[in-house]
Length: 181
Image 1 (cartoon, rainbow, N blue to C red):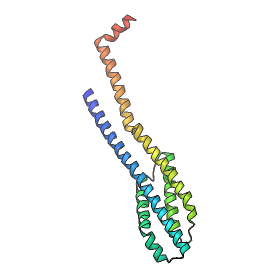
Image 2: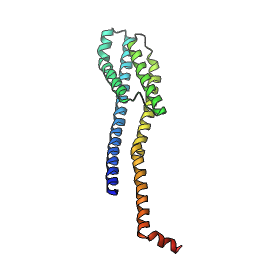
Image 3: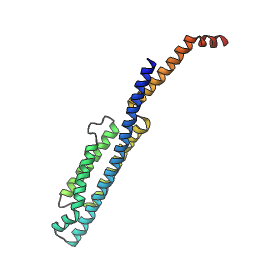
Image 4: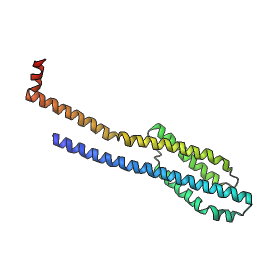
């Protein structure tokens, strides 16, 4: 019975370790996606402002911004796919909503002919702050372990204590100790 319990706990610990490893990769990927998206936003802003003041045509502006616009669309989709729209933890759910709101604001801004690029700093800050909240929540889950992992450790500890008490009672050692005091 004890061997089965140890094998079961070993499987759970191994699985949860892998989940934590995947979560760490997810954290790193989200961080990379957001930073790449922000670089594309800044590329579009820079090109758009310069072209606006030089009174260049939309065709030349598109040629200048095409790579950044395509990168922005790709990274926006990637970030949206990484987020859980049904997150149960309140703080992370709100942060997910703020990230999605920032992505929506980027789309609206770059789809409009009369965009005020000075608003980008606020949207960028919203995206960064919300992403930091999501990253911290997930990092805490990696650091402290997944809920099943923590429960398994508690069960393993309780089983070990129970087995130790059983062995002490069975061997009569506990009664010998009691007689000394």
